[in-house]
Length: 189
Length: 107
Image 1 (cartoon, each protein chain N blue to C red):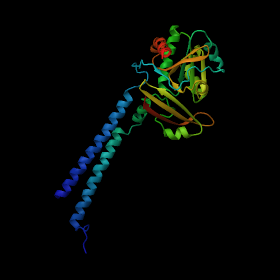
Image 2: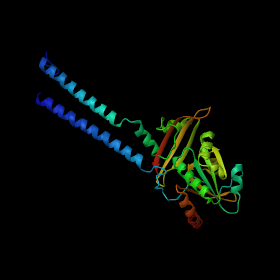
Image 3: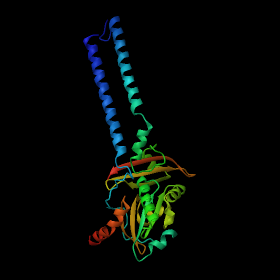
Image 4: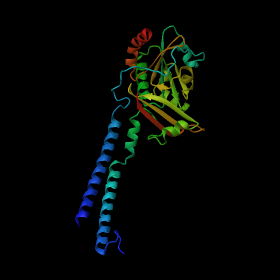
């Protein structure tokens, strides 16, 4: 082989090594992405974030029957919004199920948004959420129309049928502990 | 008249051999990459790493195609205070979903 041919082979080998390195890099990034931030991995984010899309102060005239009684109490009620399309909601529903089993569920109702009623009902039954005031919202139509909410897991603080606060959360205990502080901050602002 | 591309018999033979060697080197590299990394679980893991609980995982349509489809279900989910994903499913008129998409971004 001539010097030109040797150079070609060396160049091809270097190019192949570079291509292999790029493939390896992307594979490592995909593995890393698959391992971090997985819902329910025991390392939940304890932060409570205000849900900006929610229309605070809104008081819908028309409540779904399963939620109406819980919404019109003198004390505040927590309406937890979940969705069957949301993996982190599976984790939150599991936390709610544990609270129910322990008999430690303060005034709380749940709304499950879904693209298909059968999937929404399956979500409710898998986690035993039918043991509390619970509404399956087909397409999330009611909660979108009533409060402009289409994010989950989120918590809507309701008093006498009016939306007082809306938060995005992933840890139920952190939510219950943090609500008084958040409400105080919102009132002061 | 000879132009620059004209080669004699020996040179043509070595050129063909070189091309053959390079093409076999390239195809074995591609085959090795396909065997090592072309696993459906990798794409599925990337889907399950997000907060969307899609019916079709990995997603089988683009996000823009999904949200522009006349009958779709669109919902946002939060993994943490830092990451939000929008999950979209194309619905059949008769019920059920036939395509899914997602879009994740830091908040």
